[in-house]
Length: 328
Image (cartoon, rainbow, N blue to C red; front, side, top):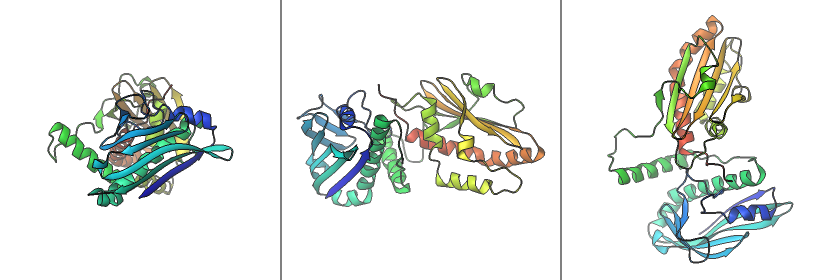
């Protein structure tokens, strides 16, 4: 079995090499935790360091600073072989390449094609996103999890959570977004509109190690909405008499503080404001809308029925793929 994930990044090799050498460290800019189990070793990066991520265990067999990290799998996981992260010259840029080369044994012969391969490739694409972002400041084509990856992640997370907590299947799950009053700290939201017809706030716990930058949470929540939310927006834009709302207009920041970002749009029929407030323990998305006309008031009355589901879903997705704290 051989699996190769590769991305060419418009950055010099030395810059990417410095990032590679921080893998599994306290300020690791590449590994996509907390969205995925963190990579940890029992000693500093180098031959003999043993660890892994989640249930995938391995030992470092070669480390060429700034160029290569190669590990050998613990055969008890069902893979006999090695995997490596390496840098290669690629024209004016640098290619970051991850390769698995091994033989599947036992149950892994079935689990790899069904689930593990897809989870592995999703994790690696998130890692490559982080590398491109850290090296260039942007990501040209961010990776997106497939519906199958999301389903597998939920199944794996649910099983691990129940094993750790003794929770029984069917019990309400802690950590899901819940409806709360408008936060006292969300000053931008509190001072933006009066006489609103629609106002709600949804709060979720900020995962350990996740960013405290509200702009990063705005990108995580609204940058890649679920397909069905996008379909609802397109349908809404075809309603006669309503001005189309486009993401670039709605999600452009209007004001920002260290712990809050405010964005929205003003239309002929209503004004819309959305606030993302982040503190040490939670992330809160607040929505306020003020009608300007009777048609706007009628529209908000209808949207108010669907709006909680949309926000709850999008915030939940952002919490599960939480943006990591910016490395320094």
